[in-house]
Image (cartoon, rainbow, N blue to C red; front, side, top):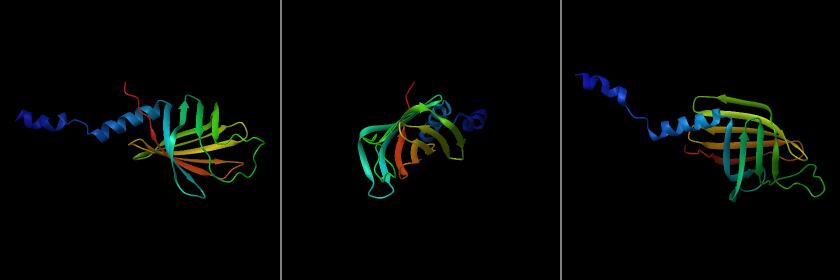
Length: 149
């Protein structure tokens, strides 16, 4: 009889539950990277990316390397091309909802200020929306990189 009573307490977590725990630990650590594999310009078709692009958060800094397709309202001579940020973040906010995370922050690039809104599910899939002062908004899809300890 004791074996039947303890059977329910020895349940092993599912693969999805293990993944959700790893995602939570990674995001809560404040040190994570999202590998971006799709870009969704406001005008034009979805593009699948073949090169490595990412959004990395490390402590109070953001390291962003993303392509840009869209309209520029104001572009400096020579332009920086994509979205390139290596700077301290402002207004970093992390909120956990039932099955996802909402992450918002601002960071300065060489010629613009970018606002990032990231929605990430517990399976590690991320949607990134970038708005800025001098260009049209743009969205990306990617996956959280989870390192195995």
